[in-house]
Image (cartoon, rainbow, N blue to C red; front, top):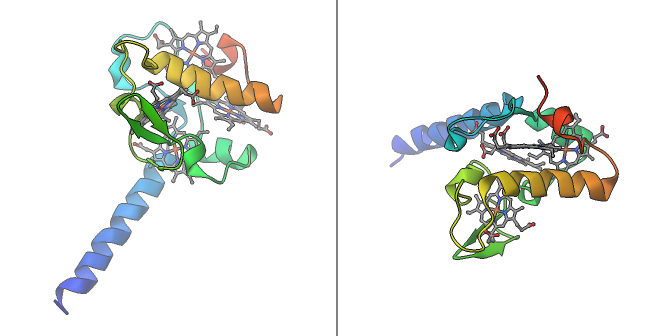
Length: 124
Ligand code: HEC
Ligand code: HEC
Ligand code: HEC
Ligand code: HEC
């Protein structure tokens, strides 16, 4: 155990570092789930955006939930929206395009800051 512990700690730290890098490197969103895109990928420089917008809490965007019920207290950073929001949702569930649009645009509207027009996010 005494030999394995440092390795486990190293593995955990590497994982955290890799995740931080993964989000730092995001500049646009183009989830594969859509397959074909009608619009250019939406601009979203993950870390810069969240710094400028002063969003310290990950769960503001990375919520949890299951079986049609959202859980606004469970943080799910690292889980793609598409894992829970299908492109063609069943019943009243929020589809993937609507999930992004509602989350992004509702906040921009509420704060009176951030783009609202199609071409400001889907920039060529
Ligand atoms: C303004 C909304 C928002 C906030 C706040 C936010 N994120 Fe994200 N994050 C996103 C979106 C959107 C994606 C892309 C998700 C997808 O691919 O479906 C993402 C992706 C990620 C990924 C996956 C990276 C990859 O390449 O797979 C990680 C990890 C992540 N975020 C971590 C965090 C952490 C940690 C925080 C808090 C410090 C945070 N996020 C805050 C919106 C946000
Ligand atoms: C672990 C599963 C899960 C993940 C990951 C997830 N959601 Fe959700 N989300 C839900 C559930 C469950 C609901 C409630 C049922 C519904 O509306 O489909 C919901 C509801 C929503 C709603 C409608 C309610 C509201 O807040 O206005 C939006 C918008 C939304 N999600 C956006 C997103 C975005 C954007 C992402 C990725 C950054 C994301 N979700 C990631 C499970 C998830
Ligand atoms: C909880 C609030 C919130 C959410 C959710 C949010 N934004 Fe923003 N966004 C802001 C604010 C506030 C600004 C203005 C920041 C400033 O310049 O002061 C902004 C600015 C922007 C800008 C302008 C350039 C920049 O990076 O500052 C873009 C592009 C943008 N948002 C895209 C998105 C996208 C795409 C999503 C959804 C994945 C999203 N935003 C979700 C609050 C939010
Ligand atoms: C605040 C930023 C924002 C605004 C404003 C916005 N979108 Fe989006 N949109 C997104 C994000 C994020 C996605 C999911 C990732 C992607 O496709 O780039 C998306 C996805 C889409 C998709 C599905 C993917 C594709 O390209 O086929 C379509 C279609 C779309 N948006 C059309 C529009 C139209 C039309 C408008 C104006 C009425 C608009 N969007 C306004 C952020 C935005």
